[in-house]
View 1 (cartoon, helix red, strand yellow):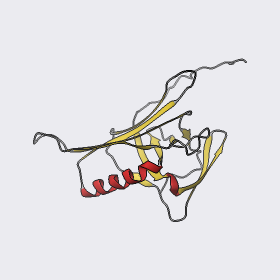
View 2 (view 1 turned 60 degrees about the horizontal axis):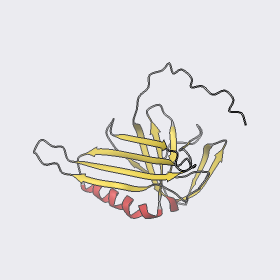
View 3 (view 1 turned 90 degrees about the horizontal axis):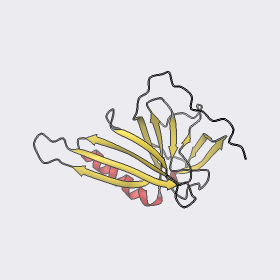
Length: 174
């Protein structure tokens, strides 16, 4: 078996980290994914179901796919999160709802600062067997008057593949 030629190309454009947008949905609210050549080309939702857009300030959201070899396997740990300044009743209600849906699993679409969109929580190799779940929902009031109250919300999963890109023709969730 030949590995052929593999190179990382030179990047001559400005790069920026973090996420520009993040949407989540319960696993049970998605009917099917269509994948062609490793890209998600169609996402069909169950009737009347919609993605939930999570709002956050710039430079407060991230996604990580971390492959670590283990006993001959190459599992990929997926982690995503946001830190939101301020704690409101609406935020509290929304996070409680996410937490209730979490045991059955969640999917997410993460849009990075380069405009790439990634489907997290679904893999061609394991399907819906290892979706995202809420890893942490931490409400921090702070201690001092000058502390900013915030919410630290994290999602995680582990499967055998990196997140799948969304094809250019797949629209952002409404």
